[in-house]
Image 1 (tube, rainbow, N blue to C red):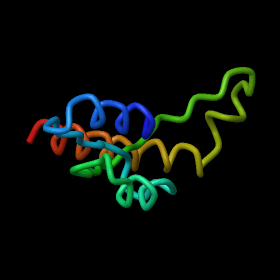
Image 2: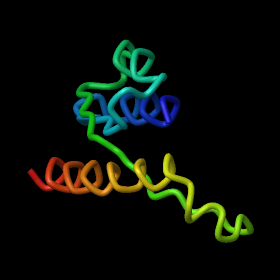
Image 3: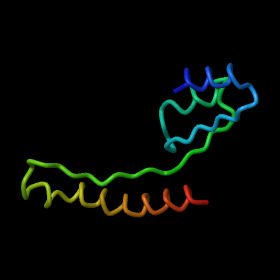
Image 4: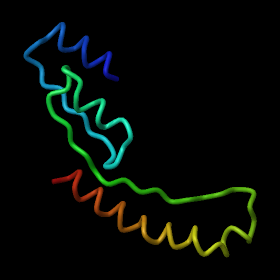
Length: 84
């Protein structure tokens, strides 16, 4: 992605390149320091955990269900921040 941004800036220096990534991403520091990236925006990101082949045991796993419940709110927050 950084190579594409660099080439875009080379061909059209007046273009504005904005990176939109996940808050807390490991590569965010690299992107922020890259000369071709003009602006960095972050959003919250969640995921719903589905595990096929695990059967009923997975449905009874408390940790997975708590994380899924929490991520419903993270997804709503991310959707709102993406719209605004």
